[in-house]
Image 1 (tube, rainbow, N blue to C red):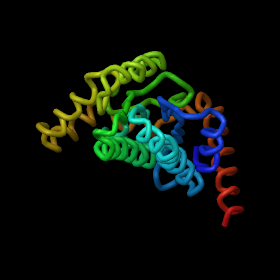
Image 2 (cartoon, rainbow, N blue to C red; image 1 turned 60 degrees about the horizontal axis):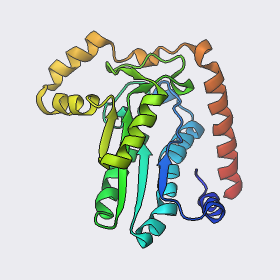
Image 3 (cartoon, rainbow, N blue to C red; image 1 turned 120 degrees about the vertical axis):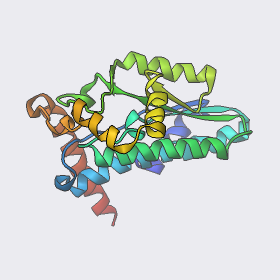
Length: 222
């Protein structure tokens, strides 16, 4: 994902791509002040640079052919700030912003760029986490169905469930911050910081290995 040469090799093997789903992502959680630099780099490189690399690899060919579809799987964390996932929030805000900007840039070319914003998904990614913010949980099949639906609707932004993004937009527009702060207290939006370390250990260990390998690769490149 983070290696542009790898994307070029993929295209050389597959030929033209009509639909790209940028779905790879990592979600280490915890307090921002204790996050290792290698973890920060991994999150931003996979969740942001990887997505940009994918678009950069396929969009020119799509434009040349006058058709194509890119679906970037962001997250409701691209709209809703959640304690315990500062860098992840940053990466998903970036993913949504890049998707919307690229959509406008390539409007009229026949290429549609869409963003999917799932709520908390029941996968290893969220294992051991109590996600705050009052977000519902969904299954991977729900997200897959939303991705397929964009092939028909070509909607700029689709949350899973569909009501979450419009609901949050209303909160931002009409709920004063003191009231919102009270609501966050009632729903305990800081519970993301209370991780079940044992339930999350397999995922955390794997992310630590990826972060270390990524850092070593970056150092070797320098």
